[in-house]
Amino acid sequence: MPANLPPQYFDAEKQFRMAKSPEAKIEALEAMLAIMPKHKGTDKLHADLRRKIAKISEEAEKKYATSRISFHIRKEGAGQVALVGLPNVGKSQLLAAVTEASPDIAEYPFTTRAPTIGMMRFENIQIQLVDTPPVAGRDARTWVNNIARNADLIAIIVDLSNQPVEQVEATFQELENMGIVPATNDAQDTTLGRRQRKMLIIGNKNDLENSSIGQSRLKSQYSARFPVMSISATEGNGLEDLKRGVFEALDIIRVHTKNPGTKPDLTDPVVLNRGGTVKNAAESVHKEFRSKLKYAVVWGSGKFDGQRVGQDHILQDGDIIELHI
Image (tube, rainbow, N blue to C red; front, side, top):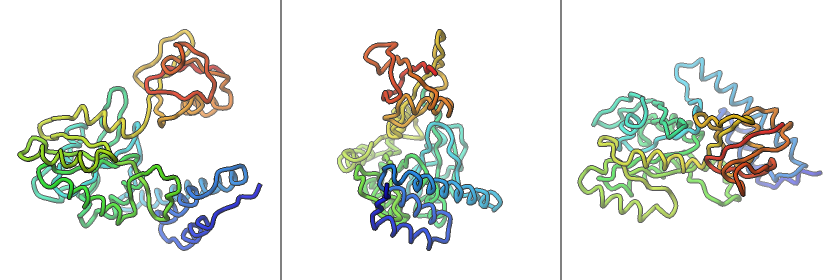
């Protein structure tokens, strides 16, 4: 079957050949994947491009590992969230409030000069938070560009007491200058060099005067497009709601597995993207399960508890599944 590749694919291929840096090469390859039609005629090409991305990523990681600073943050936990914002919005204070990390915190701007990582617990999973240097800072393009492009979610942090809408717009502009834009539902939006990312907005410092006005403006301006949350990292206001909001914005689900005749392990769930199937869960447990799986028994999203379902059954958060091979 012919591949029938569109002209935009060959534009991206040209960009790949001209690219000098690993990031630019990967960016072009990912654009080629996004543009490529999906059918049997492109299966081999799809696999080839994936192998190229993996090889370039591995080579770049080895190179950075031998340099003074690594610009790659390895993902851990159920998802990676980049904390992004202007100076003095309280990103580091937020990280310290919801994780065990100890970032530098001060009233003067540009305290964060390199990323700080912390793990935030939400119920029975851990979510990785990465505090980045201010987007307006000298080091921002290096750090934020690499981290935000690869993160599962970008959390834009603003100070509710100081023109928060203007802060959001300034942050959006800085991200767009790096080629990072909010994710849309438009499958045709494959503009070369632009990386779409899920985003949410966190209004910090809701304990300060005029913060309620700022929060009202934020919700009015953005709540139709993004989750908008209100917290105080210093006072602890809204932090539990924040954790759930981040979990929901990641658009993931937790699935618990069990062996026949035993109780499920509710402490270490399989994490899948929303819309994940029994087949996806089986592959996450063990790569051989996908080919050997005969059926599964599900408690939660079935028509009744203990229902026997096929590999294409779509799972829901909190489901319990018993895999039969």
